[in-house]
Image (cartoon, rainbow, N blue to C red; front, side):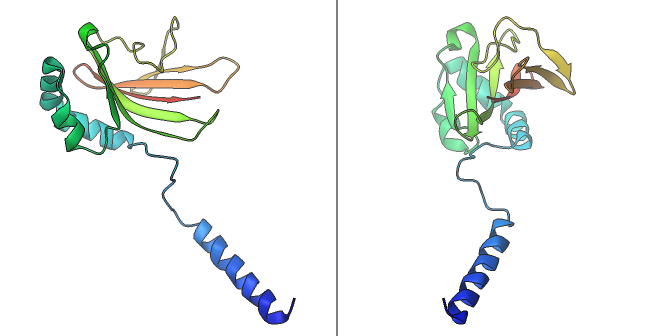
Length: 152
C-alpha cells in the first residue's frame, strides 16, 4: 500500500471515529421521553378522557407523534394502553408509554409482572426480576393516567 492510500485510510478512520462520538439518533429507538409523555398527558387529559369515554381514538392517533399505538381491547374493563415506543431487540429491549386505569391498577398493563407487589421508588413504583434483568416502573401522571417503562 502506498503512503497516499495509507494516509487517506487513516484520515477516513479519524473522521469516522469523530462522527461516532457525535449524538446521532438511534434507528432502533423510537421511545418518547418521560418528560414529553407527562407533558402530553397533562395537556391533553380532557381529550384523552373524552376519547376513552367514546371509545374513539381517531383524533388522538392523528394529533401526536408521541403515541405509537393504542390498545383499547380492555376498554370495557376501564383500561387503555398508549404505547409510546421501544428500543433494542432480543434480550435488550425496553418500552415506554402510558395507560389509563379506571381502578388505578398499576399491574394491569401488559408489561407488569402478575402476582407480585411493586416497591416504592422515587415518585412511582417498580419491580426488578430476582436473579434477572427484567424491570417494570410505573408512576401516576394525573388522574387515572400512569406512565410506564419496562425492559427485558
